[in-house]
Image 1 (cartoon, rainbow, N blue to C red):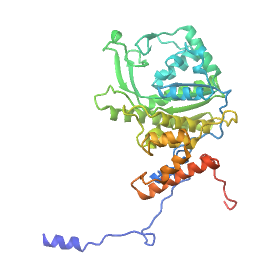
Image 2 (cartoon, one colour):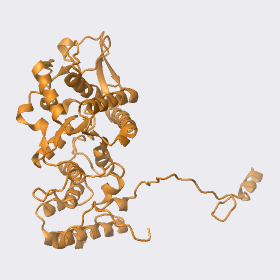
Image 3 (tube, rainbow, N blue to C red):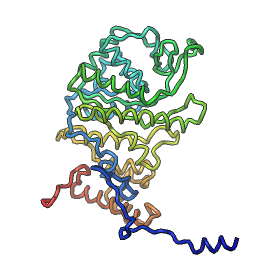
Image 4 (cartoon, rainbow, N blue to C red):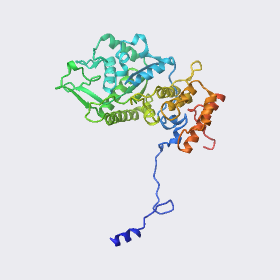
Length: 400
């Protein structure tokens, strides 16, 4: 025993530095984008720099004349409502379009199978020989010719499709392999043929590719934006916790979306909007007490950013302040004091100055506290002397 202790005490550990022969470096490829530290995520330019990077379009292309159709999971309603309220032309908010299922229940189409079914039905006249689509009260939605024609009209006139995917858990008919819109109404449930499963990455990728190709076939110039809903499962049908099932459900869809976008991105028509990452990776407390719905202010920030990135600037209808939206989103999500919500809405300059000059800590870390105060000081300067655009690109120096 004594000898072992002595041996351990005299053992020499190898140390490697840049001056030793063992030193090596790694080839990092063309792109090496590091995960940002907390202090890098404080400013209004944080999300554009560290989340949106690589996903923005080459130029804004949506105007008030652009015809937009947004449907899919419940997050799609936030997109439609925002753009409609901002006077953009959202076809599925049109009164004449309400009979189409992508309008009346568009935010309930939570899986990629049913979204694909809508495109196949409208454009390819594919009719399913069983009831797959049901409303919120388990009422059956049939394959009415008038509804099909209205759906086709909406799709035929759309310039930008915004499709939001929500979950990968599905109920299906084992005999026909068809996937249902939701679960199955109790009065028609047949345990011998109605089954539940978690769909695969491959299945969802096939659905996304089919949707992309259908749109390119029938609306070859239309832009397509895929987004993953940040709204988690309210319940799982698996025999384990909802929290872990939700992680799997979102991961499957996120991988399928990424593989599809990477495959077709160079065509110039397919894009991804990172709503999911902004909610789950940026805001400290991204959900309300129900642990499902993000605060309105966080959603408003996402759509304000979307408008700044995707919509052409209109002097008669300028986009809301991205900096104000950022501060409000942070205040509602626990990153900044709640009182900043009211201060920003009403642009109370004196109260803002009082807040960032006050003794209350924004963060227990001294460095982060200082950065928070500096950011709010910059916000006040923007209110007084004109805001700096958080999305503005820094000019490259002549030397570069």
